[in-house]
Picture 1 (cartoon, rainbow, N blue to C red):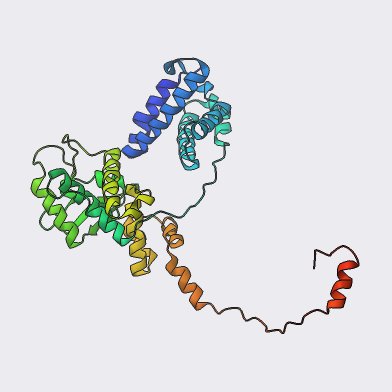
Picture 2 (cartoon, rainbow, N blue to C red):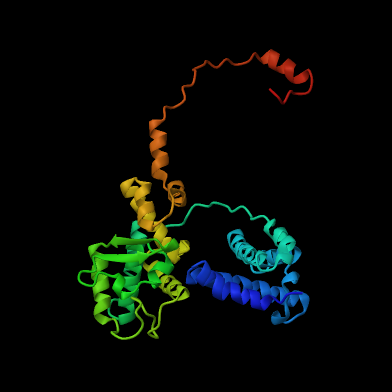
Amino acid sequence: MTELAPHLATFLREHLPHERKASYHTCAAYAYSFQLLVCFAASKLKLPPCRLNVEQLDAPLVLEFLKHIENERHNSARTRNARLAAINSFFRFLEYRLPSCLDQSRRIHAIPIKKIDERLIGHLSHKEIEALLNAPDPRSKLGIRDRAMLHLAFAAGLRVSELIGLRLDHLDAQSCSSVRVIGKGRRERVLPLWKGTATTLRAWLAVRPRHGCPELFPNAAGRAMTRSGFEYIVAKHAASAALSLPSIAQKRVTPHVLQHSWALHTLQATGDVRKVSLWLGHSSLQSTEIYLRADPTAKLEALTTAAPVALKRGRFQAPDRLVAMLKDVSGPKNYAE
């Protein structure tokens, strides 16, 4: 029997960050996945987590864990697949260190991923975006910060990790006319900003504390903003914006909705999905196709350019009443007619 803890620590502390050069967010997501798995296995096997062995994490237990997070934690199929991907990555790492677990690893790799429903993305209209951006109070320091964050998140189409990871040196300090973003997959891009966004950023830089963390948007304690912190900011101002525009209350407003709203507005304005993909830092156009499905403009253009189907005109002839009566009386109806 092989102890799980030493190999799991090596995987998370050495293999992922140093050998694979995985980002902090990837390491954190994998660590949380194994925190859930280890706690589930420990409660299932009646053992403390530090006493678990690699051989105990077999395919049946992994399947029970996946059912547990779906049924009891109410995770989606996408989250379930992400947890399974972390487990598969760990067992690929073990294949070269523990050849004795090759059969166990292959059984786990054979667990299929679940298909995901490709639903239409949620987004906000121009009026709803305007109401949300104007919701923070510009008379307070935190209100100025929140307004600058919301403006930048929408105007640049940033992910949450990109926004909270921005540092002061990523911003054009003189005019605030552009921002340098290090996005997903370590792809770096420079994005120009609207004048209104630059104005809100200059207002925030004027009141931002000079000392503290290097991030552009620190939290109230002066430390780096977290993902949950920005989600709270968006939810708070969405609730206040719903008081002036009730249609916002009917939608689920999240930081990702701001990015979707920018992408759809840009697609409708330019009609070029390649520009949207380039701006968002997508590695392929396949990631940007979700906006084509949500945008009705392309479908309306196809509908107007397509010729309608020509129908042959005919004349209606009423059936003879006597023949109709005889058919009705003569036997069971033919439902295939």
